[in-house]
Amino acid sequence: MTSDLRVAVVCSSNQNRSMEAHAFLSKKGFKVRSFGSGNQVKLPGPAPDKPNVYDFSISYEQMYQDLLAKDKALYTQNGLLHMLDRNRRIKSHPERFQSCYETFDVIFTVEERVYDQVVEELASRSPKEISPIHIINIDVQDNHEEATIGAFLVCEMATMMAESEDLDNDIDELLQEFEAKAQRPILHTVQFY
Image (cartoon, rainbow, N blue to C red; front, top):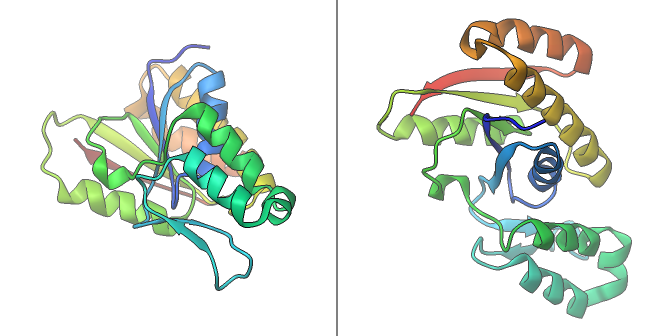
């Protein structure tokens, strides 16, 4: 399937959930970009109070090499090296949503805090074209297994949207149908670019 729907997926650090969905949507023929909404990129470290923190300008390759040098066994075992390897094959570095001014038809977020940050960011911008953007949140826990499930859910919803003849008219019905099927609460709002 090839779709004209312009899609963005946003998580906090543009590492796990948004990148898994980015990879999946891209394979399905969607025009997709992914982002993080946090101030910094945070990855698990040797202890919960010792995360690895990076700037959004640091490449996935640099993060990979940094973690490899710090503790290859730990970061292989917890899946971070595998995740960063996937990420660096998709794009060079994480991107911050607040720095992107491209227009999308739909933005998927994976947790309520990220959804609030995206809604707040778009509300602070002056609309230019007055075209609607659908912001949809599907809660996805930040672990590898949930990220895979989340990617399937995001792709399923994006496919339903892409197949709609009149998305703005059909969206409420599509979301109700999807929410019942996915058994997850969905947040949705429309803003304008």
